[in-house]
Each structure stands twice: as C-alpha cells, then as structure tokens.
Image (tube, rainbow, N blue to C red; front, side):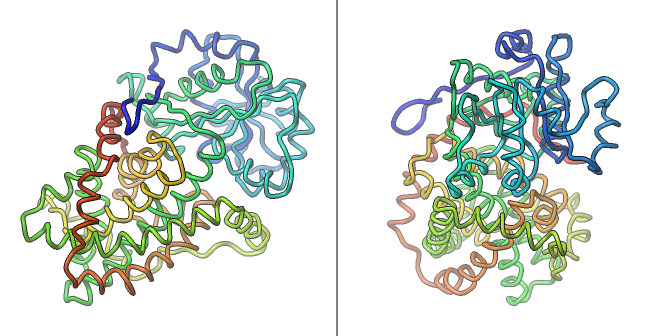
Length: 474
C-alpha cells in the first residue's frame, strides 16, 4: 500500500487462504473465546467455520450464570461436545485464548484469567484497552506467553454478516488491524494473521497494541461516535432555528452525514465532497470547514492526551462501579430522533443532495482527527481506517439504517461512555465557536492545506483495499 512517505505491507485475505490456516495455527489445538458480546458471538462462529475440517477446536467460555449461554447453545456451542464451558476452565485448556469480555470486566478479572492460563498459551485481544489498564496499575502481561491482537474495523454483527456473504463473494468482510506485543517463540505474527484471515478480513494491516487502543478509543470519542453525534444534533438545532421544518432539518443534518456525505467519501474520497458542490455551495463548505477545524482539533488533542495518560481508561473502570447499581441513561430521547421514521419513509422520493454546511463541519472534524493521529505518529493505514474507512464503510451505514443515537445507545460500554462524555464537548464547540465563526470569510491557508493533504494519497491507496461487498443492515 503506497502511503505518504513510503509504503506499508498489507495482507490480502480471502477464502483461498483457508487451507493454510493449520500451518498458521501450528501448535494450537484449542482456541478459547471468552465472552459472547457482539465480537465474541461473531468471532467464535467465524473461527469455528473457517477451521472446520481441521483438528483445531473453538470453545466459548462464559462466566457462571451468564445469560448468554442459551444463545451460544443455539449457535452450536454446547457443554456436551466441550465447545461451551466455564470461562476459567476454557482459559486453562486453550492454546490461544481470545479475550472478548467487556473492557471493565477484563480490567477487574484479568488476574484470574492470567492465573488459569496453560504454559505457553497465547493471549489474543481485539482491543488494546487491557494494555492501557495494565500500564495504569503497574501490571504486566504474564511472562512466557505470546500476546497478539486482531482488531476488526467494524461491529461484531458486521464481522459475522459479511463473513457469511464471503461464501458467495470472495473478499467480503471487515478489514482488521493486527499487532504482536509479545512473541516468546517466534510464531505470533503468523498466528495473528491466520486469526485475521479466519475471521474473513479481506485486508489486514499492521499496528501496535498501544497504537490500536489509542486510535480506537480516541476515534470512538471523536469522529466515529461522539463527534458525529454532536455534529448532527447541533446542526439539527441550527437548521430548526433557521426556520426548517423537522423533516428538512433532519435531512440536512443526520440524513446527510449518514447518506450522501458518507457515500461520497467512501467511493471518491474527502476532496470529492467539496468538488461535487457548485460555487455557492463550495463557499458555504469552505466557511464551515475552516471555522470548525480548529475547535475540533483542540478537542481531539485533549481526548488523545487523556487516553494516552490513562485518564479516559480510568473513567471507564470507575463507571463500571456506578453502572452496577443503575443502568446508563440513553441519548435517543431528544426530540430530533422522533423524526427519523418520517425521514426514512421519504428516502425513495428523491436523491438527497449534499448539504454544504453539514459537509464542511463533518469533513473538518474528520480531518482534525486525521491530523492529530498523523502528528502522534500513527501509520497511514491505521489513520485512514480508524478515521475514515470505519466511519463511512461500517458505522455510518448502520447509523443510516437505525440513526446515530441508536448506535450510541447500543455500542460497547467503553464507546458509549466516551461518546456521552465527549459528544457534548464537541457540540458546545460547534455551537459556541465554529458556527458563529462560519459567518466570516473562509481561511485560505486551511483550504490549501486540505487540498494538498497527504490523506488523499493514502485514501486513494486504501480505496484499492475496499471490501468487495458493502455492509448490509437488515
């Protein structure tokens, strides 16, 4: 993959590689998957199906009394054949143990899990949160164990659904990143890449466990969830105050971001959003973009600092104690979201054009995150996947089918907490700083920087790595 300043090596996946999986998994006879949340549910089934016909068995481990046991049994994991059991028993019997329980639960119970590991077992993660937590408390992964990560760039439901589509269309799937954190016997990279191929990832790019959790946790709080929620809520209010009716305001805000703006970025890149506008529309885009970029960049930098120093991770662990006593409130109750059914009913009536002001605000927020990640040293494959591709090819299509608030209210607890914490910060910055400044002429220097931005080259290269099937949300 050609990127600014050089090239990165990316593994092209596909079902034609499945016969090589036993070689990649050499030394592994039992894969344990702890947890039956969206990722556990998807990954356990994908791994089982990809490894069918080999002597490698996939087992699901759940805590005693887990309400997920019945659903795991319904999908073919049973106590009778040894593919479903107590989480610590599964941990003790696994050569590769993939930890897919909730972040806060993993922070609370990792010592029990580590103590149960068989000698030489490899620890697998799909998120680097545990590394950040261990650093925060002065802990470490146990010596003598490999530590690898495979991190799908999409929701668990999409990981499974697109894997199933891959049976007919080779290359359907969700891209993943992989990392090798500890490799005592020299086989960790092959095992991680085999795991990613077995999940159905059409492309797998390299990262580090630290880089993954920083970019992932920051992205959830910024353009992937918290930021996009703030964009659409603040713009809906702005358009309503300007005199739009409810449906029109929703179409110009949420429907625009999840629909034509996301599709344009996905298929033609960031510059194409602006280039597709008429001269008057470009002027509106330019003023919105240059007014929004600075305030958005300030918040992304603040989020990054708090993730890097452990503050954000501590807040997730602390929240677990509160949430044990009372459930988290939902964000989907604001008046805006009651409009969604009427907007969805109008979709077949016309092709919705890109709203220039909305596009300028959203693209500026996305570019702010891109620039912060680049300045912090992340590789370009990770930058474009975490800031652009995961948004426009995975999360925004889901939000288009359901709405943004539904996504925020139904994502992982770590992501949900972050979106709720930082979304209001973005919203205040938009309403109090960016939107008033958008009444002024645009900043030509910022626009030149956007036009010449190296992300356009990176996205053009990444476009060749786009999965062959679009995400489908029933």
